[in-house]
Structure formats: C-alpha cells, structure tokens
Amino acid sequence: MEIFTNFPLWASLFAILFAQVVKVPIQFIASRKVDWSLVTSTGGMPSSHSAAVTALATGIALESGLASPVFALATVFAIITMFDATGVRFQAGEQAAVINQLMRDFNKLVSEAKGWQKKDEEEKRKELKTLLGHKPIEVFFGGLTGILLTLLLHYLLSL
Image (cartoon, rainbow, N blue to C red; front, side, top):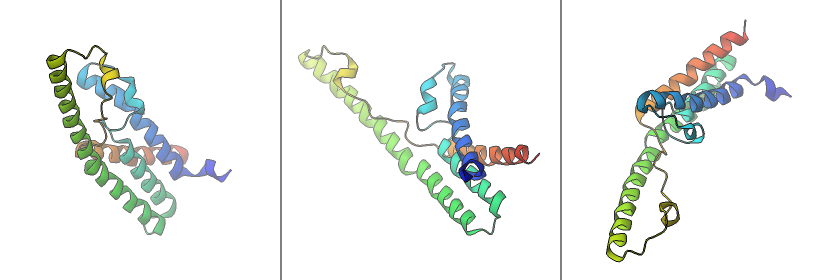
C-alpha cells in the first residue's frame, strides 16, 4: 500500500488530469467552441506530457533532494520527453495535416472525374491524427503547470 503515499507519482498523475481537463476551457476561450474530445486527445495547450514529467521531477526533488540520482534520472527523462513533444511528434502532426489535404484533393478529383463516390466521408477514408505533438509554447506551459501544481500540492499536503 506504499503506492498510495508516493507523492511524486500522484503529483504526476494529477498534473496529467489537470492539463487534459484545462485544455477544454483554454480552447473555448480561443475558439468559442467546447470540444470535450480534448480531454482524451494528444496535443494542445498545455502539454500533459510536459506537465507529467515536470511534476514527477519536482516531486522527486521535494522528496529526495536535487542531488538525488533519481532526481537526475527524472530530469533527463523530462528533457527528452519535452524535446520529443516539440520535435518528432510535432513534425509528425504537420506531415499528417499535409497528407490529409492530399487525400481530400485526391478524393475530390476522383469524385469529379468519375462520380462514383456516393459514400459519406467517414467510409471513404480515415484521417490521420494531426494533433500529435506540441508547439514549444505548449510544452513550456505544460512543464510550468507540472512544477507549479506539484509545489502547490506539496504545500497543501504538508499543512
């Protein structure tokens, strides 16, 4: 039952949940549309991956100290995760957007040329997911979210 007292783990899980849920009102402010699917999707503001790994590293720092080898491990893990979120995963999302546009253009060409496409769009093709990675600002605020939430939780739990 020691898992229930593992502060870095719970801080990290809470940071994921918080970052995923807060995406909905942030998107609403930006677009005036409520999109509940953001709660379970990747990408968007703030990065829940960044919030999770920074919350984990912050929780470990608070429990084990900055000189701890486990803190070093968590910090390097956080850096790699956040770098990947802005690099490889972001570029994959950009490529997916281009491929989806190519598919739309190709389907329109075929439809106009032959007139055989009577099915709805979902049956014709399945779009690639374009919201895979994060812009650097999303990663920054995800990381900041993880650190601040963990410090707040640590303070509240130590009262």
